[in-house]
Length: 430
Image 1 (cartoon, rainbow, N blue to C red):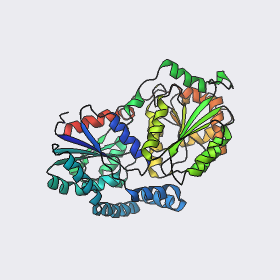
Image 2: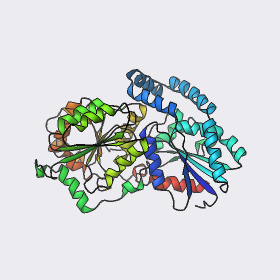
Image 3: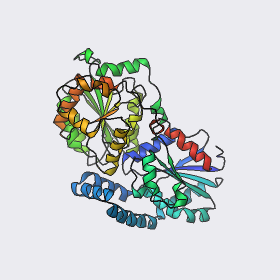
Image 4: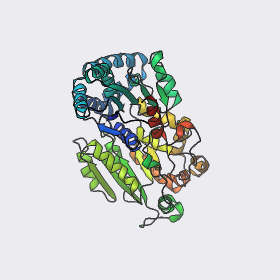
């Protein structure tokens, strides 16, 4: 990749930690020697919209309605695009500063993991090229396997999606000239999380879930669970009741989140519980850094409980890799999280909806062990007390132990080198 005259600009929005995690993954895999910078644009309105659509019941229902109703989605997307296209002043001002500080770079590659900023950049692209005398390439990374119309950024030069199914559906929203700019990649996971762990580290994980170790106060038999709290701080009551039910047994919890008014009381309450460690970031970026640092400890957790957001794509890693935790998924919020579950089920990485319901109610789970050897994720019951009991039964029956030896199917969409593919495709256009 010849990048001597190319400046790479990473831009995202703190409206949901997922956009930041994906950008961190892309930055982790960037080629050496390139000139790169981050833009300091924060879309406050996007944050508020995200919070309302994730937390307030009415707005959750409204969001899911317009995401799943074709007419409503088209209407909302049309007006939201107009709004974003008319609000480009902050972007123009920021990019003008970057151009003045980097006059030698006449080609820019702007990588965006949030559609709101991508639409505004696309709208201002031609103006910026003329004003600053540069060539701009806009690359958009879709952060869920969800072909929502808002992700069709018409001025993008490349749009990366995690499956052929999403590409086919998203192409309908592009004109013919732009349809070929959509590229299917395996989901971008930070290369550092794809590294293999040592035999000793993997044995520590085995000891957490091996039913033969029995109940013990030592590291053997004690299951470590980590819970990342979403940017919108949803499902806090669920997590508190779940943790309270298990923390006095052989389970240790690490809870990571962002400092905010929404999560303050939750963190104060769970700090009082035994076997609970809390890490709170002062901002979204620090929270993400705290979360990823967990995977570099020699005694990392074996299980993660999370929403089926972008976190669900760690299912592409096996437990012998640094980021390959067993995933327990809470109830989805928003169409994109339902779509992510569909991605996992159609690829055999988690039980189907029918199978999951059977697992909830069946007393003897040992008959599922052979099937569990293909699973990387399981959905939890909506009731936190039932979910806690379900986790105990999954461990005692040997389901978790079987999942430690899962083999990821040999499909292009399930590989762990999506970040590398992104950089290869960018190299072709510059």
